[in-house]
Length: 433
Image (cartoon, rainbow, N blue to C red; front, side, top):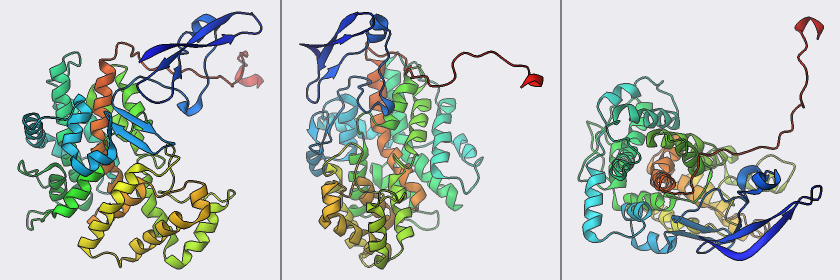
């Protein structure tokens, strides 16, 4: 990041005071106006609800151009990574900034696969939840509690402690997600296997039982691996900003990731893929589609088609194009093209790609639309969709958290406000009100 020779001038018309605002340039993307000194010099705050036009940090991890439909991890286009790489290799890239050599990858893969087991006392912690608890509620609690079980490497000023804590979170998250599912089903926990791949292990722990093993197919493991790769990071979204904000206070990484999970749970964020299935169930059958399409076009109707359009992408979500292929591969292998709900989803997809209203408003199917279909086809209930998202996004959260800790410009997060409440007033005794 560098300051250009361009500046903007901000002048207070009442006092005549003015100041120069430097314009900063990144590697690519829009330039930014540096407003850090505005309050100190002029006494003004900037006002940007939702931070849609505010850069809260500098980062080298992920770049998004929503207008052009571009997503890059460390400079690599997501299309190239999805075609040629895998989730763990991309995880290494996101964490450390470069693609690994074979030796580096083998060491990283070994470290992740050999730290998947949870402390056995955590099993008791699971049993403190109601059986019908949402898996995200369980994950919030269990991940936050990890610091009580793994507090031997929590000196965050030590790079090695940060690495150990990071690897622990990445390796144990699939186990926590699978155990959350097993607990909700009243089934015994299935332990991880060190010789299984990352997503292969998660599928096995989720669907195997002590009395019947589960054969993980290459198509399903690859589809889930690709979904995880596409969800690994997505710049400064709500949950990532939550992790950074929590981490800015010096909170331990387990608490920070638990905070990120809580933020991701919202239906406007990670819960969107679960909302897609809820919407499909509400529509019911294909003959009801015209009615709901009409409602979706009515600005006075609160109904919205979930899984279409995106807050950032004003073009086709680049992740959706990639995962669409995996979606059809999974449906083909499982012979589920005749499933009524999936038929309904495919009809909605066809309409969205052909209807002038959807095209003009750029309401294309996004990654949440296809991920929900894939998860359902594999046998995951909708309540698990966001838990799977959280498992994948843990890599990005950790990388962003680690980057923040080593950023010399990082400060404890403290947003300001435009106060619109009552001005100062005097207290009135209760018998005189």
